[in-house]
Length: 374
Image (cartoon, rainbow, N blue to C red):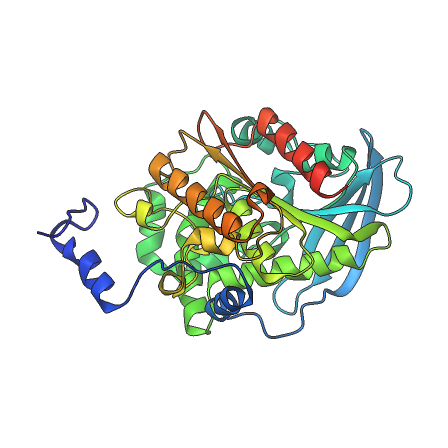
């Protein structure tokens, strides 16, 4: 008798049928072959990846941080806006970090969720940051630790978001009727509610254009990294990336697809695909590059450039994943690094509590980055 899945009900045997068609989640060993397979799955990895028309929009200094707002064009859609943050007393090139904002079903803003610009924290984000980030802009705190930190908006967020009217017209009356069942108290909440449904439509468009959401987002993150590498104040031998949740998703993909990343921190976004079955499947489409399950598991992407340093922070009571799935992924990562002869280059840290990157976790991650990117 086939294993039963609540989500699939009378179609529970679909899982066994799929596994009879081809192996699922085979072990994809670190190395160029795995990265090539990933790039083919992403389907958006063959063109120019330099930022175009770079502009400095503004500069400021506040709370021990020198900041710049930069903008560039990736080749389609609106211009990308980004913050570059570094210590106010910085002298000479510093290690660089790409700090990747989360998903969180909050697309009205991108970079501002984890970084303060010249205006300080936006009032609407004060409450938002209390849960996942311990109430602070961790990108600014990371800059004060001695890094040049780049935080940019990415496809569907902030300066790269779709206009609300375009989303509503694309999705049609059925989705509009659903939105009426989720009354919003302000325009930002209204936008985020619509964007929740809109991601499914964008994913379909990406699919028939030969790519997927993970592929487009990862492309834009590589463009951003290439901008960071072009700066004279960045020591390009020492560059890393970090992100929580959807940002951790992006960090895994950026590490796998760009040779300049030398250390990666993934927070709250590690599991096996098998453990997602019959659990929380509301994750972003970025977690599911089309066809990748035939080549490997999610953790294989994160380990694809082993033995380069990797830190993964797990929240034990994270309702987005099962604890078993997180621990199985942890063991798979450990085995990858062990087989590469450098088991200590991978660090897995488990913390009690829900989905978050709180002050304790931030402190540990910052210390780890300083050790890896001396």
